[in-house]
Length: 179
Image (cartoon, rainbow, N blue to C red):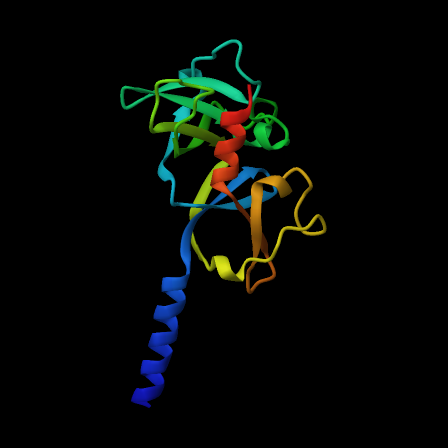
């Protein structure tokens, strides 16, 4: 019995080591995704009127927000990907923001070496473990066509739920190359 318990514990430990944590969130109603936490800094809830609109930027850039005394560019993630823009969803007067470390983003701020961006989403839910080696490749029969370029795969959960895993580097690249 003791050997079986040790084997079970080792299996759990090794699967935990192979797994990575992801933030589970709702992009738009009825679309739940996972985002790796490797670049995640913080999740905020802010009043939309605290975002200062900036003209001459792509439509998916909602504006700038004063975050800890620094400029945080606010990106409507749904709009960037091709879904209905956040402001057209009629969600509320507050928004949930995923703060990501984006590295150098010359499009939005030429002097920034370690620029942060805020991804506006519908709702953050919880942290989940996911083994990247077990991800299924993205396909149009499982994932909406708008998402496919931004997804590294999807996780099939034991209850049959399919959760697309966003590639944070693809999102950062799309933001930095647009303008």
